[in-house]
Amino acid sequence: MKELLGTAASADDCLGYAGLVLLEALEPASHKRLLELATELQKAILWAHTHADSSALYLLGCVASLHLDDPNLNAVCKYHDAIITRMTGEAGSKDEHAAHMATSVFHSAGLLGEPKGELLTNLVQPELGNLPRLREQGQTLEDFM
Image (cartoon, rainbow, N blue to C red; front, side, top):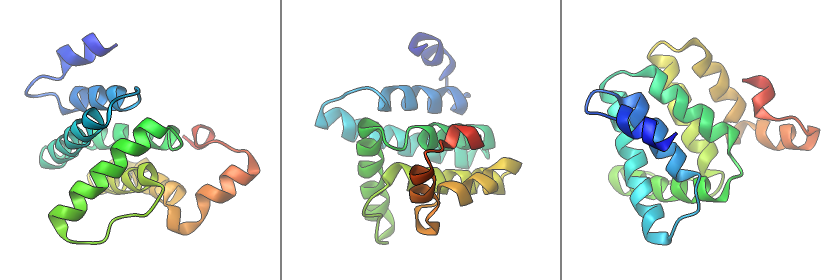
């Protein structure tokens, strides 16, 4: 899968690049590699924004949503959140880093024309209390996707 996505992640395929970054973010990695992957994640998101690629943003949101509790992805998203905090000066999230990233990219995907994006934003947004409720009920986000 990595080889196929690596081939697809050319200069004009932001969806393939986003997929490759996500695959690597789900694997165990050293602290240094987690920081590098956070930078790669930021590049993938910026690339999707600048090319108005709702599919890439939707993919980023779906994978983050389906792997909210993955410690590797959460670490990458935590470092990604730190990058955004340094760039914008706004306060970052304290927890649920993958959920916050998913909320952001789903919202962007919705704005760019992915109709399910905005609906899923409301599902994974930690502030609305949906995640704890879903976890208590034993439901998975995969059921909703």
